[in-house]
Image: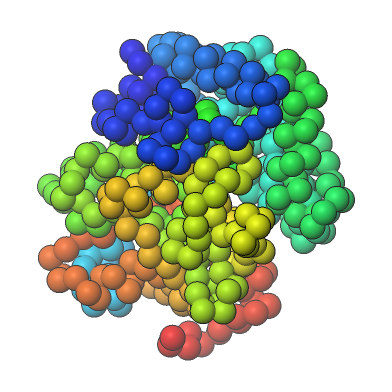
Length: 414
Ligand SMILES: *Cc1c(COP(=O)(O)O)cnc(C)c1O
């Protein structure tokens, strides 16, 4: 069995990335030679381990018995009626253990670390979602876990810091620079470079230098494989459109990879338009960015004329990243995936719509995909079907929503 079978179930992702880590002109690794040696070693070991039937069996077993897979596909009839067009279906990644898709790649990464004989996993985290998912997987595997987090985020995301500590992880506050995600990434990479022998860097999305975008994509592609089979069984058809929110792009590439070869299925990624594309306060990387290098890989990025990443913003902190996974840039360039946007206001509207009409409180990140589905459903006939990847649940967002958008009666229309 090949590494591809582990994750794509025979559904090709066009054989990408190439050996050199590129998806077309995107991806690769723009890193110091010493880190390149470390990455080459991770690539070699990953390819070997991912082709090992024992690894595949253990990964699948944990996804089923620990994470609670398969997550269901649900026909949201009342939400569809509200949209007044195409039928909307949800792939319920919010029902996974820890409440989002991130547990899929964290279990894979921690299992990989253990198979490689590492004692420790390390990672960056922004809002703390990846930190919590990795701390969970580390506890499960009996690995130490160090999470690097900007001081501002540590102060803002107290519940996730508590969760990580309860799970036995060390949270290391990063006080340099902007004291947020970008500096946390830099700090964690430095520590990793100092000691790549005893620890493995476990990145939080389908980003970073090769082989990270491939590894995370592979572990997340379970979403698309499951969804395709479930949808066929439920409706007798493939969906007309599959949509997902795009931050770094892991939940989106996870579901898209199940449908890449189904050329009749349109794939639409949804980027955060924040306060509006014209305001500059957004994180719509592919819609507004240009090609450049960030965090060791080439992709669309939001950058200034010197190639420095621009400050980005979204109501959903998980979408608030100035880059995007290289495979998305490639899929945009070849025209296989269309990238659209949804604003903060649309996301909040969708957050309430799904809560009130279906009894499902979505993460603000996922609410962007729901918002786009509501908008696009109106443009399609009632006989069409849209499948939304509902990447996570909204428990983490309820305090913020009650403070800023406390709608007790009707939700204001857009
Ligand atoms: C982290 C996160 C995202 C954004 O990350 P991707 O890598 O783009 O998937 C989306 N939804 C939820 C619920 C998240 O926690």
